[in-house]
Amino acid sequence: MNSQPANSNRNAGLRVLLRTLRYRNYRLFFGGQGLSLIGTWMQQVAMSWLVYRLTDSAFLLGLIHFAARIPVFLLAPAMGVLADRWNRHRIIVWTQTLSMVQAFVLAGLVLSGRVAVWHLVALSVILGLINSLDIPARQSFIVDMVEDPEDVGNAIALNSSIVNGARMVGPSIAGVLVAAAGEGVCFLVNGLSFLFVLLALLAMKIQPAIAKDTKAAFYHHLREGAQYVFGFAPLRSILLLVALLSLMGVPYAVLMPVFAKDVFHGDAHTLGFMVAATGLGALFGALFLAARTTVLGLGRWIVWASLLFGLSLVAFSLIPIFWLALPLLVLSGFGMMVHLASSNTILQTIVEEDKRGRLMSFYAMGFMGMVPFGSLLAGTLAGRIGAPATVLLGGIVCLAGSGWFAIQLPALRRLIRPIYVQKGIIPEVARGIQAATESSQPGGPLPPSRPI
Image (cartoon, rainbow, N blue to C red; front, top):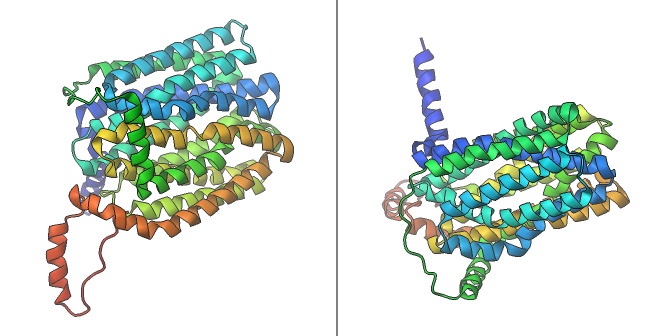
């Protein structure tokens, strides 16, 4: 007898979870990216396994990841200026096309048996150059596809969910294909997968862009963006925590082949399960955030998520049993994703529109750009003190960063509140009336809401 209300509640919850899909352009983006990202994760897992199979070196494993991401660190701020000056939709079409070409070249070298380590380093650098422009443009474009500011968090969370849904599927497929046919097939599949996102992008109906200021000198826009980002404490503090966790925590992923082969005594299937477990946790984290109906209170989740991420890394480093370690990877994926998506949402909510691309370039610099240094550091440390001790050290640093941000949070809330009031996220007029009413009641007024 109660099945109808239960079904109604489930449908309502699903509508809240997927509310951003009511925008046609976002639906196309969601579907195209979802299919393409499966290939991307397949390539990442196959690349790691190929490098470690060819070299048996944790250092070279770190070097490949360093080569793929160092261009983001070096070039992202300049590319953010371009993302603010150029048409973001066209930028993404070109970057996705170039990424497809890179995957096909990689597949050709591996399938023909002519691949060498220097090929992998060079192609990783090329992909990093492409991503240095693609990431700030694509992160900014997500917001361009939604109309209601309250949907920004849902759009970012759903985008994270497809990234991590693919992270679950892609590595599992890669593990099977690598064992059955070799790494080259994974690279070929990734190249073909870009066709889906390109078709989705070309099918979008994009509103004519508002004329942008392209007369000012490039350097002026670059300096203006840096001053804006680092001159405002909430932006600066969030980005610093993202950078710290990306330097010391996120690079644990580069050591997964070492754990799979040397700690858990497994093979490519073992690595696929480990990456998929992290992706499962990250998917849960993204769906958790997508189900939220407001951006208010995300600051607390940045603290708790970074704390969970650090604790799970510490525990994972101390447990040498594969099936016990997998749940810890789920928790680490959840903590990492909630931290990153919450940070991204707050940044995109409080930023001035004409500086969105530049802010996202610094976000890319803090997230993707610090990973190469962390990967190189992790590979070097793992060669000296072992992979478990390296991950343990990273987890401890993440815990310290979480504590530092928790201390900063009350001051950041006070600075962000006027922005949320101005954008209507906090209805100040209605709150003032409510406060006056509550003050006349026994017990006095309720405490004010916390913007983050």
